[in-house]
Image 1 (spheres, helix red, strand yellow):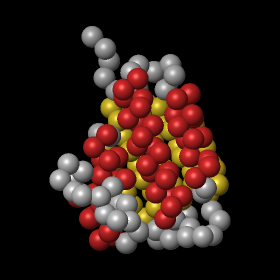
Image 2 (image 1 turned 120 degrees about the horizontal axis):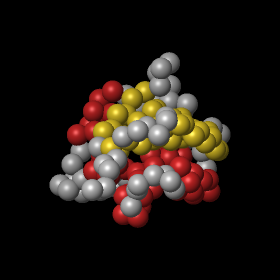
Image 3 (image 1 turned 180 degrees about the vertical axis):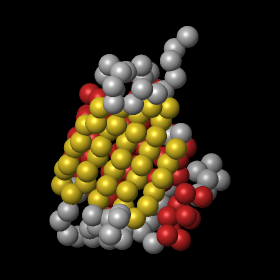
Image 4 (image 1 turned 30 degrees about the vertical axis):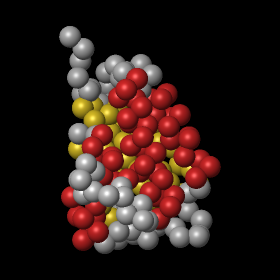
Length: 145
């Protein structure tokens, strides 16, 4: 299998979150991804996109870009926005949150912890120019016996 990338850009509105889930289903259609893993990956990409929709632009307009990168041994999902971005201490706090021991904050905040519990690798960082947020999720795919 050669590397392939599928990109999707949509308005940062909740009405469009389903598109990311549908695109993921299409991307993995010919891969060896079972229904449970697919459901988990859909949850992860929905959480990442939902965070961008809820937090990136306030009440303003903007877009969310999702890239699905299929490699020989893994699937990478990258969700980017060009909104307000996150401060490094907040990113570190989000990445250290343990979903099994943390009560959900009143304003949400469990999305990153949920994603971390699903994927094998998670990187969250501010965009290159300090604006926006990039959520890079990697799931390694094992060959069936």
